[in-house]
Amino acid sequence: MAVSFGALPGTNLIGAGSRYSAVAVAIVLLGACLTGCRREPIPAQQILAGRTMGTSYSVTIVPWPDMPDLAEISNRVDRELVRVNEQMSTYIESSELSQFNAQQSTDWFPVSIETAEVVLLALEIHQLTDGVFDVTVGPLVDLWGFGPPGQSEHLPTNEQVAETLHVVGSEKLAARLDPPALKKSVPGLRVDLSAIAKGHGVDRVAAVLDQLQCKNYFVEVGGEVRVRGNRMGGGPWRVGIEKPTEGNREIQQAIELLNLSLATSGDYRNFYEAEGQRITHFIDPKSGLPIASEIGSVSVLDENCATADGIATGLMSAGLERALALAERHQWAVMLVVHRDGQLDTITTPQFLDLTKSPAHEDSQ
Image (tube, rainbow, N blue to C red; front, top):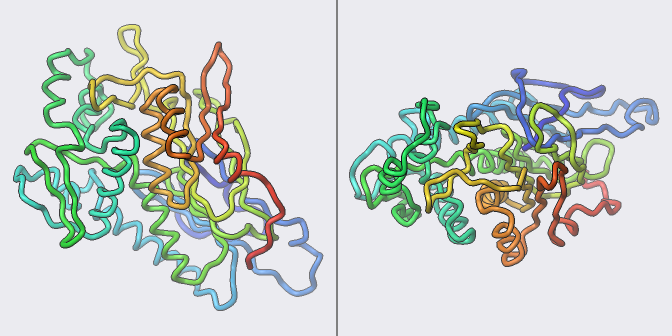
């Protein structure tokens, strides 16, 4: 996850201010020559910011010839994010996903092509992660106190977990594109795309900017990031991955990105202590139990932010040994931050190292 440091000198900001919660920190730097090394005025870097999906978003744009009015760009971005919410939110009762979750029929339920595509991607990642990424675990998340009902006085019993497992499992969910629709094989099945929808939102905003012919941008929604081209003044965009420690906001590692997406998943912001146990919101869809792991966070690089988002959550839910095996099997670009003997160790795959080397990139403006 990521957050920009806000409006910098030579930067214009538009949109609602917001309080960011993040795992990765985007370092949006301006070149030193922006003030004084040219005679002609240089357009300021532009930042759009606001709220969406219960979190924050920010978009940093390097101006280009024939750029539309900034207010129009902001409106286009906002409209696209509203559409994502109207399709996939579980908090908006009228959204496509909420309506699918509420209906008890096991017949095909019509949805937009975008919703069907995201569910199909989720089912694909479910297969690639040997089932640990599962968008139907919502009832278990609720049972363990991380959903809208909140935490109960006592931990769930084995009987409650077993009963809830009857309505959990991606094998009970189907999606198709022609015509776009979803289908459940058990009436109580619910789909929660929160582990992939923010990344999808990033991809949708990036698509809007691509349509507008923007060549250099940084998009962040709820900490998930996608970049294209270079930052103002040249050079790749820089992102800091935050240490998975409670209460502190320190950078574990800074990386440079060119035409890539970054998603980070961690367990250090959403957990509680009960009956001598540390209960996290990562639930094993097979056992129905919270996952105890030495992994503090997982960061994944991919061209597609939704894909990176889902894989990061899946690996976080897999545990260290299984996560490393999955990353090696699929050649994923992954960085894991691991708790060992009171210290934080970093484990990176060769693909992650290859994609985050810092060669001299040509300015794509």
